[in-house]
Length: 352
Image 1 (spheres, rainbow, N blue to C red):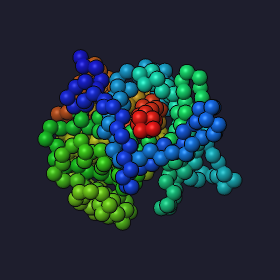
Image 2: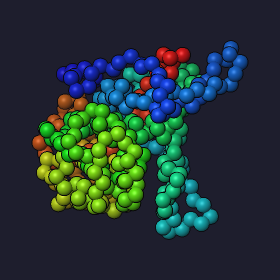
Image 3: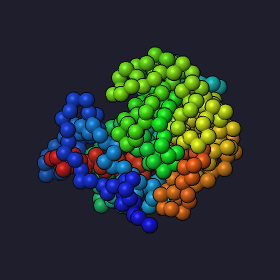
Image 4: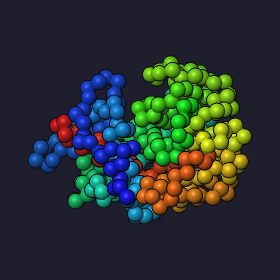
């Protein structure tokens, strides 16, 4: 059995790249703690990494492979939640919370915590629903080493995990990619999927069509904007759901037999993206059983049976079954943020 990062699909992790000054790249590293002898409390730095997803895939794959049940809060890398109820809070009020996601990666000797806020927007808003900051600590003494843009880290690492799942679970000769949703996760998924896979056609659907049109006009490469979710899904080989839906928007009767679905949205126990037919008639993979059984409405409400964690497939203890219709329910784990944050910090260190 090959160690993580040593097969042809995921080559060994390269050395940290030199940092690009390309203006369209994303600034990730917000502040670096200076050593005490430097006299300054912190130095503001910008790390611009246009292709963050792909270089750290082997490390992320290794974290999914190796992580014991103790690398994150509560055993699954889940968040400790502080609910925020304003004076207007009542039944049906918008959800608001602050989450704390600490984790340690032994393989990377990296210690982090992510602070993430979620504010449900009842109407379209210029402010993202999720905002986050990642703190990277020195695991030998607990001192703060860096502050990173957690929103970008989250978007990139989530897409990277979906890419790993897709590499393992998608049907052979997949030609049509479908994205449901046009927010931050749609962009990060499109970026890495275009870099790793070859699709003849890419489709997108969003409840607000203007946002889907904006997406299609802003990415590199042709994207077909569909008028309905059913139109987008019909005949697609790989489907990515990255929506804020609370009731199903993807139905089993639309899905091509043998297709692979990455279900990224619906991260609350009473929210849904996928209907019961699709959940029960697909082979279900998750990042964490514990998290899926407590946080995923798609899993909890459908009572679908979990076949395997993604790490079990990577280890070879469970088969991938790409010939079947497969669903990967992604909820995210704190150790994924840790691996990504360490990669960004190491890249900055190599350039400085």
